Image 1 (tube, one colour):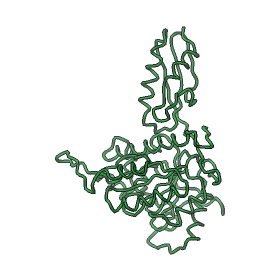
Image 2 (image 1 turned 90 degrees about the vertical axis):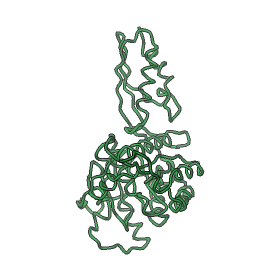
Image 3 (image 1 turned 180 degrees about the horizontal axis):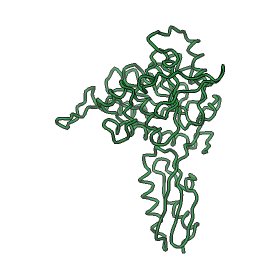
Length: 357
């Protein structure tokens, strides 16, 4: 009869396709039980949004099928997002495993749309997610999430975030609703960022998505100086003008030693509903070529789809409709790529602190 040791030895031949290490060494295999020709085990993935779960399952079943005497395999999956701190001189936020900055070199590329749908996608796939709207001068997150609820203050130092589509959210648009503009200088921006980071009771989060304002100004520097940012996602469109500015954003994160998770090309193409052809409205492929030139990952293309625009305007993000909804597939593909890339960053040898809870 097969033994637990034989099962574990067979599973040492199953590699995580992105981490390039076997799943036993990565401590992903839990609760192995063997008896009377049946094997049951639990595999803990590094993110609920794992894009290669089917591949891993197929490889596990193939490896166990080679063991004589095994007639059935009961395979279950769970997920535990690893916490990796790459900047030891920066404090973390209690309970928050990863802080992911979503940035762009210029406005108008759909950065907030990407940030909102990224947060909702990760939540829909089973992660605990928060969304911090750091675009203080143009806080559009409340509109895109369809909420006007004001955050509640428990005391002078504790603010409860608003819950929208299961995502814990804070935004200046919820604290300062209406059309009244904020005319603030750098020190005031730094102060509000500190409150959003330190005074908001985020609780236990796998990911805190931070929607940064466009450019490379005070808010970006305040965030980077205040907390350990796990990585940055840079959003662009295929146009040459957007690419010229996104290069500055990439260089900024490199100069301050923040890991660049990759580049997302938004408004990449339009699928014609009549001829079923693909129309490259703003050009095509420039985002990928730029990522390759900077030697950073290309995280994917998000198409031009009316449902994405309608979702943002009506407060019903397209990601909330599920991964198979019109316009949502490319959004979910990017979310999986971001989660997978972050797992790779957190579990590489270069990350000084690794903790899987």
